[in-house]
Amino acid sequence: MTLTEKVAYLKGLYEGMDLNKDAKETKLFEAMFDVLEDMALTVNDIDEDLAAVEEYVDCIDEDLDELEAFIYDEEDDFCYCDDEGDELYEVECPSCGEAIYLDESMFDEEFIECPECGEKLELDIDFEDCDCDCGCDCCGDDED
Image 1 (tube, one colour):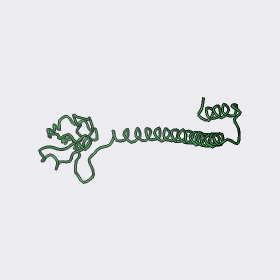
Image 2 (cartoon, one colour):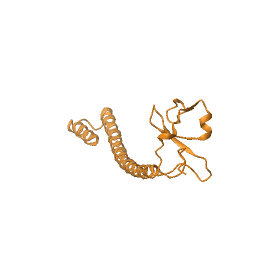
Image 3 (cartoon, helix red, strand yellow):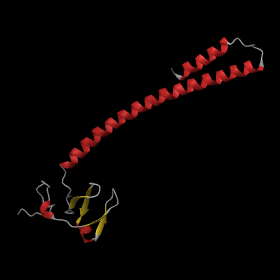
Image 4 (cartoon, helix red, strand yellow):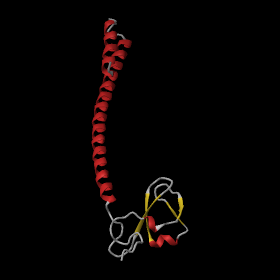
């Protein structure tokens, strides 16, 4: 039973009591039922609006999932070195698994802080384990 149906049921019970229409109490009950009806209709409107917003958010979420899949799939094939020779190295945070990209200037630091979880990480990079297939020397490999 919906809220508006419950209010209608209560109003029907009240009207079936056959009270004196001129009594102060009767006028009070009628005013209370008018307010209850208005509140029930307002709650019903809010429920409908909320359902529409939930549907819209679900659509946005699906679109975002597609966009993330597109971006992250494209990123897997991307070489992180640029044309000026500043090489970026990808390492994985052992705490949260987030990919962290480092340039050569960061290797002089004693530790770095993971931008995702804030964990302080000691730098111990082994360039022989590089799995970039871009053909350049971004992993420290010289194929000359």
